[in-house]
Length: 498
Image: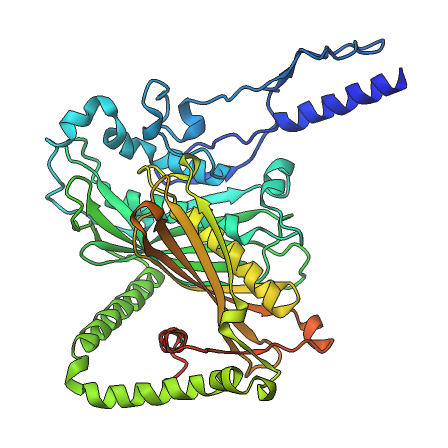
């Protein structure tokens, strides 16, 4: 009898655990969402047990499986308020892998995309004209925020907790990309149902800096707005804030900043399309606009300089050859005289890790392609593992240096992530830096073809306690000219040779 009671109690506990599900949030014109996962009714009903107040529960029967209810449809999966797409082809649904935050953000912008994905209006889409009259909008018009109720919501907190009781950075990257996409959609919307909406894709991520650890036991807020627009590009800055409850001093609540660049495409032709103008109002908005404008001009100037490289080709090639030889000198020692190689150095090829996956329908976004935040999540997890294996201690994430989204990734693609420690910066003994590169390849075995879809660059360090205990970070050296060129390109981008 005791064994039967124990089995029944365990099964009921499992049923209650499975029943906890996050609920989607609501949105308003100036979107401010509070993410919470309230405990609702149990969608998983077990036919083997009945709830009674007295006596022992009846013994379980072998032919009574636990019933699983999906609860798909309506607002839960990111459709517009009051809409129901259960009658539409599954290929037109967004994926169901994503976090409750991402689902809430997609719900907030789903009404704009409904006319793009509405199968019944497929014939009308070709007749809808593009937006011809550009509007002037303010950063406040696109400002959007999300609040994570970590302090009071146990379920939401467990979804974001890492083994060290901090927020999972990879999962947060997904949410930041979803938030940036929602902000871009709000800015580009002309609120005219007769014109076809733009297709907005993530082009790059610049300088996502972590200023302090993000605790998973304290409420968290992410908020952002458009800071600059070009002809067809939109720059968005997002801030992650968390108030330190244990600190007596008035500390800076900003824990992380991120800068995203989106580009607009015509949803029918795929060509670049102009976006609404931006008119900054406050002094901070004007300062951010000027900074991003200067950055955009610098980027264009560098492109022009690269076009004219042949004019000063001889001199540039000479300087480039000297830098390559300097980097390769120690690598040649490893190859030709391995017994005499520096024991404080390691070849770049010996720091590599790799993983592969088939992209699943559950990982797609509102456009039916693989969600960019999911790619950043997987790249970060591999980069963290690479730094962990290289250092020998748990690394501390500092920043996403740069991310390029070169080609879209589709459902069914065979995706390979390859990582390595590209170089280390050991000048500051108190905070040595480990720079990790992750390259995503879309591989098509049937065509014997592989293309680079994304490149990611992350920077990690190690905790001060490990350094005090004598931990030493090794110097990374290239063994091939191709590896040396990659190192130089990244160092130049970081301004390490200026």
